[in-house]
Image 1 (cartoon, rainbow, N blue to C red):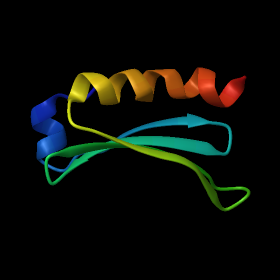
Image 2: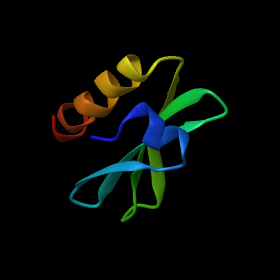
Image 3: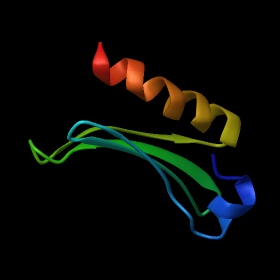
Length: 68
């Protein structure tokens, strides 16, 4: 789990669920969580948040959201 400082420095947090990759990153003061299916070449969702805690909830829930 990356810190807010690491995200501010440009690091990106990733999780893989089969062919789906979920990423969490910080850009211009906004946290982004995106899921992309590389087999079907499409974005599943892309949500933006003002706080890291909101973004982490989405990032953690992405597995349940994608598997169910």
